[in-house]
Length: 378
Image (tube, rainbow, N blue to C red; front, side):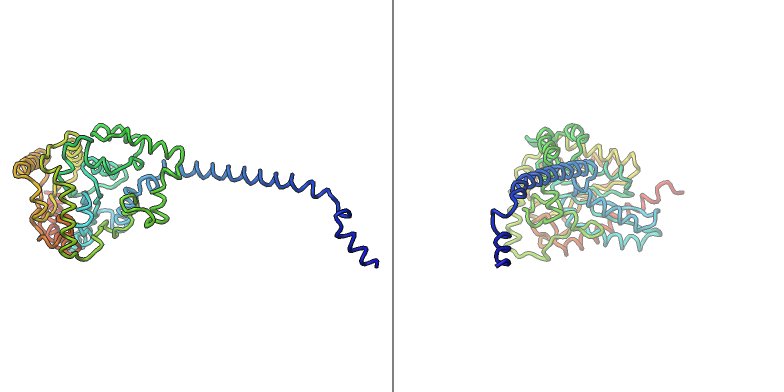
C-alpha cells in the first residue's frame, strides 16, 4: 500500500510542482529570441561577406574572366620566366577553333626557348570586350609577345541599341569604375546599374547565376551559365562537344547562323564605338610592343554568302587601312576549311580545329613570333 500511495503522489497533477510549467513558456520564448537573433546576425555576416567578396574577387563577380586568367597564370608559372606568349583573343569561333596546346608544342620544338600559347576565346564578345580584357590582362601581369586578334565583322556593325556584344551581358561582371569607360564606346550602361545595385542589396540573388555556376551549373539554362570558362583545357581551348554532325543538324545550324547574322551583314555599316575600341586595342598593343595579327576566321560557303559584295569590299579596304596604320598583319583564313569541317557554317568541329590550328601555326603564328622575337636584335 505504501508503494502504491507513493506512486500516486509522484504521478498526480496535484502532487507535482507547478513552477516548471510556468517557467517553460518564458524559457521557450527566450530560446526562440536567441535563435532568431543568431539567425539574423549570421545572415547579416554572410550577406556582408558575400558582398565584400564579390567586390574584391572577380571569381565571384566575373568568373568568365577570372577562370581564364587563372588558367593563363597557371600555364605561365609552369614555364621559365623568359618564355614567349602567343595569345589568341576572339569570340566563340576562336574558343572552338584554336587548339593552343598543339600550337605550343610545335612552337616550343621549333624555338630555342619555351613558348606558351593560350586561347582567350569569349562567346558573344567583340572589340570592346576584347579591349577590356586585354587591359585587365596587362594590369594582371600578362603581356603577350604575339596577339592573334579575331575580327568578326558583325561585331563592328552600327546597331540601334548599341554594339552587338552589349546585348549579351547584364553588367554584373563589370566593375563600377568600368561603366563610364564602357559607356564611352556606346554600351548602354544605364541598364547595368540596376542589376549591380541588386548585388549590393541582395548579393545572394544578384549573384545567383555565378553561384549556381559553381555549385550546380547544369541546373540553369546554358545561356545563363557563367561557368563555361572552367571547362577549357589548360591552354584555354574549348572544342565543340560533338565529334561530328549529320547533314540535318548541320543544315539546322546553318539556318540559325543565317537568321542571326544575315540582317546585320546585309547592310553593314561600321559603328563608331566598336571601331574606336578596335583602334584603341591596336594602339595599346603598339604601346606595349605586342605584335598583332588580325585574323578573319574560317567560314563555310553558306556563311560567306551572307556578305554582299559591296560590304565585303568595304571590309577588305578597312582592314588593309588598319594594317597599314598600326603595322599589323592580316591572316584571311575564310576559305581555309571545307564546309563539312563546320558544325553550323562558322564554328569548327574538333577535326576542323586541328587542321586549322596546324595550318595557322605553320603559316601565320611561327613567322609572326620569329619576327617579334628577332625585333631589335642585330
